Amino acid sequence: FSDLFEMHFIELSKFKKEYSEIKTALDRWSAFLCRAYEMEKGKIPKEIEVDESVKKAIEKLDTMYLEKEEREIYENERKAMMIRKAEVKTAEIKGRKEGEYKKSIEIAKNLLDVLDNETIAIKTGLSVEEVNKLRE
Image 1: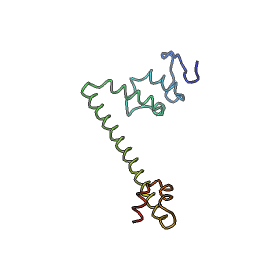
Image 2: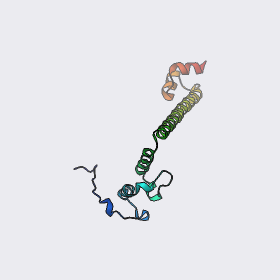
Image 3: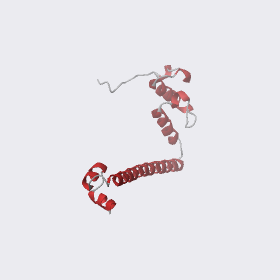
Image 4: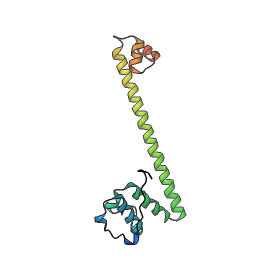
């Protein structure tokens, strides 16, 4: 066997722990499997809520109970949210790159009176052409 895989056999009918007694991931999953009918998004016991994978399972279960039209609306909203997150992430990356570029320009301007264009280009990551334009 492998250290990467564990298998547990649990008789769920014998799992009687109260939420306050739940400490491990195995307990959280066992509680979820035994009491999924009690859990819905927004009303997850705090002992269960700490586990992201169980929270995702509860969310999936909630969507399974939706009517087809409601499920489509939910999925469309979820996709739109993912697109918005990706757009924000892309904007953050772009902003960071622009900031780094502006900083390189600023550094290059400060070095113009002490170094040649090739050295400035190497030290700042700018092209020699960009450094030439700064000198003009």
